[in-house]
Length: 387
Image (cartoon, rainbow, N blue to C red; front, side, top):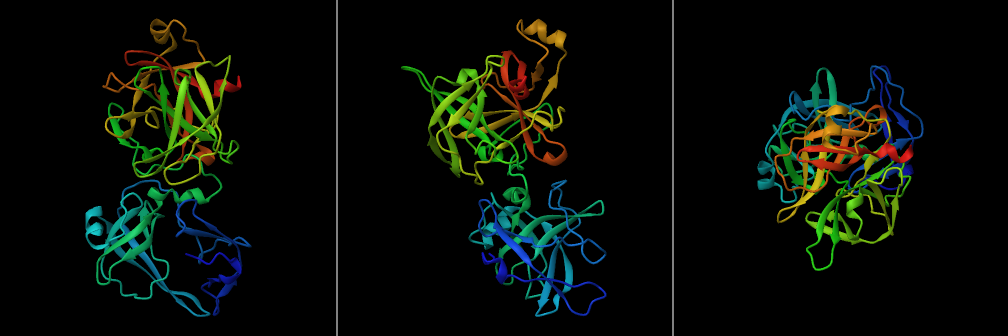
């Protein structure tokens, strides 16, 4: 981890035509939102891209680890980086690293197999892959055992490393939520860290489990205090959020905001903000910067079968006329979908979609289930709150 003082850090830049390295001044050091071992350096002046300096892509286009290698370099005092090499490497099953690296965490780390490094003084090793001529960063070296060919890396995908950037909402999931259109998956809550379990207590009855979404704009306009859910989940309620593997903390609801023109959506205002961590992060809020496509959207809910899980399913879209045959109160401000979930018992679902433009690669909260008949579902748009 870097020293917190930017003045103590020197960044060297050496071009092909210069004999001595130029020192770039560091303006600030920002730690990762929830992994203090990772930091980002912000320079006082931007680096001009040329043949000698170009960035590697941070956002992941694909999770296929093909044509990959460990990027290594030496740092010589006063001269900058030298002996840059890429050693052939490949991603392997987590079990290989777990057997040799005691602190390997499969929720955060990526296991890579590489031949023994010829460079024993490696500086900032990284795992990079070539995707159609574009170099993409997949992980930073964390640890390895002497003589071992296995390396543990902080995974860009698993840690949501892009949350160090301008936007922190909707960062990619720890596990892939993408499924075939006709299938459903159940995965851990941290796979969709914006999903919030809500328990509705009724007299002399078992608490009813409902689903909510922690959602906010790119710049945290609500301070992570707003939970979006359906109107059926607002009786005597208890809200919790995840603080670690299988650990949840209850939080107090200070008020419930309802909308007369959109009665299906309610906002639970929390008394205290939920902290941004690996296990609790908001989905993005946007009325237009998402792609409504059956391959890029999911119906999601929180379920409980011994432990809390997130259930994600695909769907198909139906016409307004077909919807009106199923739902008397359907209007053109709603979406009509056919849920591919084969399970008949489920909680009311929420719709999320992949974002576009500056929200590309992030998940955006789109709406809540308002009516259901069998597998036919009507969705009330989040944007209807602003009509």
